[in-house]
Length: 586
Ligand code: TRP
Image (cartoon, rainbow, N blue to C red; front, side, top):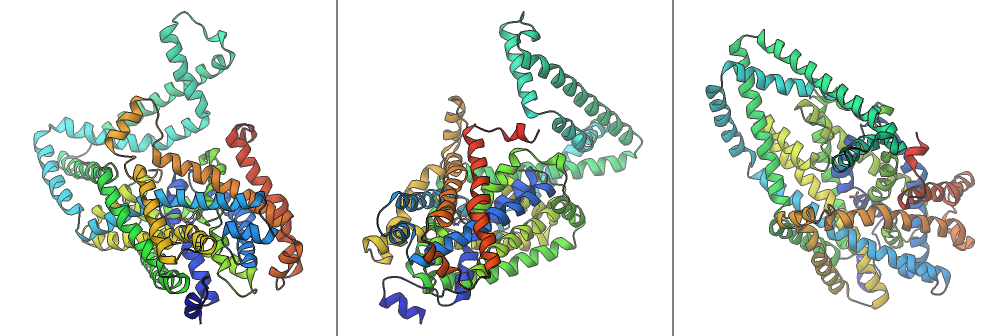
C-alpha cells in the first residue's frame, strides 16, 4: 500500500505504524547515543548527570517530541510548509521552519565526518589494525626491560602507580575549589611577571582567590609526593623478578596506548582520509533517501535497527561478565553530586535535544509521513524510551570494558575511538571480533540518523519546489558534503597549527557542532514548544490528541506551555551570559 503511495502521490508515507516508530527511533539513536552520551557522562562523573539527563528527556524532550510529531502529522508537510499551512499563510513562524532546514544541513555536514571515522575503524578492525602495534610494543617493552637498571624499573612502576593512586584525591582537591580560582591563580602569575610590585590587595577578587589556589596547589603536590614515596617503598620490598615482569607489561601497555591513540590522531588529522570516508558515508545516505520514504528509509531502518539492537546486546552481555561491570554500574547509576560539573546541567539539556533529533523539524517531517491519527502519546513515549534505553545500554557496553582494561571514563571524544580500540587491543584475539561488532554498530546507528537529517532538507525541495526525489537527494547530499569538507579538514595538522598560532582554539568542526547543538536546536525547540502550546489552532491540536486521556493532555499542555520553555530559556539565558548557573547552584 505504502509503495503505491510513494509512486502515485508526490508525498511518501510510512508503510505501517511500526515502520514509523522504527524510522523515528533510527533517527534518534545515533552517534549521540553511542559516541557522545557515554563520553559526556564520563566527563561529568556519571550518576547524577545521568539522572539530570533523564529528567531533561522527560520534562523537555518528551513534550517537544510530541509537539513536533503533532505539527507534522496535522499539516502533512515538512517544517517550512507545515507552519505555512497551519497558519493559513506565511507568518514569522515559517522562519522557524527555515531555521530547521538550515540546522539540519549544518548538523549533517559534520555528522558525516564522525560517521566516516566509524567506517574507517570498522574496516581497520576487520584488518586487525592493532596486531602490528602489539608486536612492536612487545619488542620495545623487552628491550626497555633489558636496558634499564633495577632502580629505573622500580621508579618507572612507582610513578605509574603513584599517578593512579593519587588521581582520585587530586580530583577531589580540584573539585573543592571553583575552576575559576585556578584560572585566577594563573592570571595572577602573569600579572606578577609584568608588575612584580603589585600586591594581592589591589584586586579584591584575586586577593581572595590566589591564596586558596596556592594552598590547594601545595596540597596537590603533597598528595603526589606521598603517593610516590608509598609506591617506591612498595616496589623496593618486591622481588626484582616480579618488578621486572610488571615493568615490562606496563611498558608494553604504555606503548600500545600511545600508538593506538596515534592511529585515531592520524585519521582525524588527515583531511583527505576523513573526506574520503565522509564521501562514502554520504553516498550510502543519499542512496537510502533517494529510495523514498517507505522503500528507502523505512526499509533501511527495518533492517538496520534490529541488527543494531542485536549487536549492542552482544556487547552488553560481554560486559556483564567483565570484572569492571560492577564499577560501571555504580558509575552510571550512583549519583555523586561532587562529580558533576555545573555546566553539566546545561550539557544534559542540550544533549536531550540532540539525541532525540529535536528542535529542527526532523521528528516533524517524520510525523508528516504518518497518516493515522491514533496513538500519538504512546508512539512518542516509545521512541523516547527506545532512545534512552539504547543510550544507557551504550554506557553498559562501553564502561565495563573501559574499567576492566584500566582506561579513564573521562577520556572525552576519544572514548570511542581511542580508549575502546585500546581495550580491544588488550583483549587479544576475542577483542578483534568485538571491535568489528562495535564499529559496525556505530556505523549503522549513524546511518539511520544521517538519513533523517538529509530527508528534512530534501523533503522541502520535493514538497515546495516540486523537485524529483532522486535529484533532491543527490543535490543536497553533495552540497552538504562540500559544506562538510572544512570539518573534515578541521583537525588537519596544518589547520590546527594555524588556529593555535592565531590563538583561536575552536576549529570549524567544533564551531558547527557548537552552533547547532547549543544554539539552533534549543532555540528551535523553544519556538516549537511555544507554537504547539500557545499558537497552533486549538481545533487542529485537539484532533491530534483525540485518543489521549484528558489528564495526559493537560499534563502535556502544562509541560509544553510552561515547563519546557522555561527550562530552555534558562539555558539560553545562561549562554548569553545574563544568568550564571554556576552561581545559582553555588
Ligand atoms: N539524534 C541523532 C543522534 O543521536 C542525531 C540526529 C538525527 C539529530 N537527526 C537529528 C540531531 C535532528 C538533531 C536534530 O545521533
